[in-house]
Figure 1 (tube, rainbow, N blue to C red):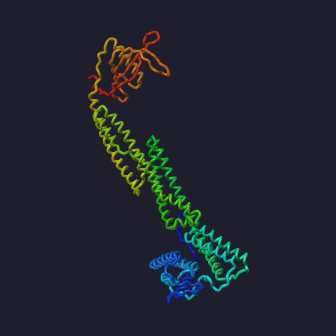
Figure 2 (cartoon, rainbow, N blue to C red):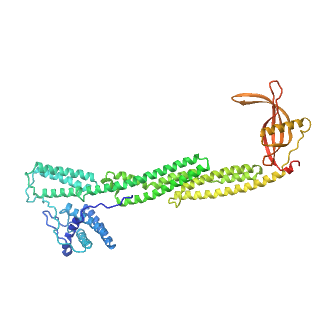
Figure 3 (cartoon, rainbow, N blue to C red):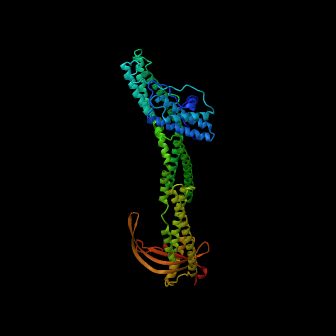
Length: 555
């Protein structure tokens, strides 16, 4: 199940609304009156960059409030208002007394926050006391000076808290926690080692203690960065399971395609090829389905965690999740390399050479049969290639330019296969006509080797040939060559065999079991024995043969 993408909650809604509502009455009446502070700052020009960044965040949240209210989506409006109120609380808590609260930009933003609060709640809030700014002792003030050791430790705490602010701005939780730990350690030393040795109500100590408490709340509190990190870690855990599952499924699918390509290279029967086509198409379609789901997962991941650097800083498992997400994000390129590469290896650049070779062979009647045989072999191979490449392409449409080009190439191959098939079919027709013409003109050859001694040789040839072929009945015999004695050496069973033979050629007219007649040219021989005599006649080999019509036997 796909995890629900959620936004981390920062503070309780009631707490934040109470703070924001407390600002509304005075602002609606006559503007903002800052609470007096021991070191109130006079109006200045530019605001501190940290405050400006938080004000930008508040403005963004208030824009969302207006958008949601326009859609009558009160729930999301409250959520955005809560976020804006939390940021304003941090400005007052962390920077109170350190900037000009009468700055026109800050006053305008405060008024807008109050107005948005009224819009969301539906009524003006009750008048509550505005949070006071942290007391800071002016240099040279009337307060009694702190113990020098305490003052040094307060200075160390202040430095650590400045670092906390810096790391919080960068969402570097680990560094912020480390700096906070140092500040807490120093405060503990003050309270344990110097208890009763200084005025605990001294403004500098009180301000430092309050600032430390605010930093603790920012990191360890219910809405602090630590809590946000914990909730984000839970979200990452959920989505990481989906990412890992989809990554494994895609890898398995690509492995299947590679294995099927190897199997295609070894297949040798139509049944094996058909099985490979079906398995390859099924694998490709499964991969496409997972890839479509992964695309949505990646989109949701970016929506849930728009700041990947912040995710990496806050969550230990964040970097691994980002890595898996990036693998899924780059999968379309991987798919093009694996599947597109397989198509490149199998799709022929062109079959024009096959067509030309067949055309050349078909021109010569004597070679037409061989041209058809070779063409049919090539046609069978091309059809098998087209079956496999079509399975690799799967069902369209194809998103990438690479796969679109391969699909176009595959379609062209289909057309070329049809052209070659038509040419072969035409050749078969021509061969059939040629065979028919050749059959009608076939005659039993005449010979000059007849009568006398050749009559006995013909009878022996007939007996030997029928015994040699078993299923053919010889009806006519003629001798087509005289006796030829030769001494020959042949390599047999790892040694030379030397023999002397007498060869003679005969032409056999045989009736086949199906009633047709066929003429065979046969070579016979006699082998010289140890005593010098030649043995009986035996069939040595059958050469050329052709069919003959019964009515043409005696022509």
